[in-house]
Length: 85
Image 1 (cartoon, rainbow, N blue to C red):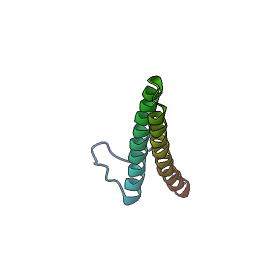
Image 2 (cartoon, rainbow, N blue to C red):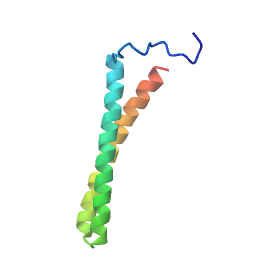
Image 3 (cartoon, helix red, strand yellow):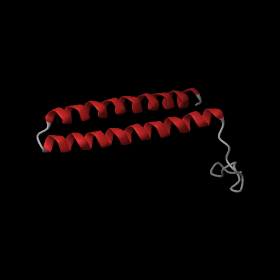
Image 4 (spheres, one colour):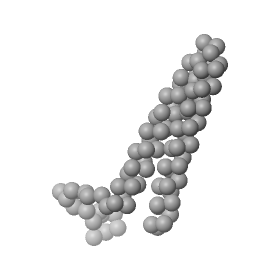
């Protein structure tokens, strides 16, 4: 087998290990929080456009919270990869 060939045959189902499932979950959670952060940033922009700066500030704080949670999931995934390489 060459270095470019996959050891997994195409017709074999891939069964994630517990460690792999944790990595998958980290990616999914990161993506969900980044989507929420994006939504709140767009809301903040709309609120600023109409001059409602209090609502814009509230949306910005929500966005920052989701960004922080996404970063935590990313850090967990990086730790996992660093320990397994």
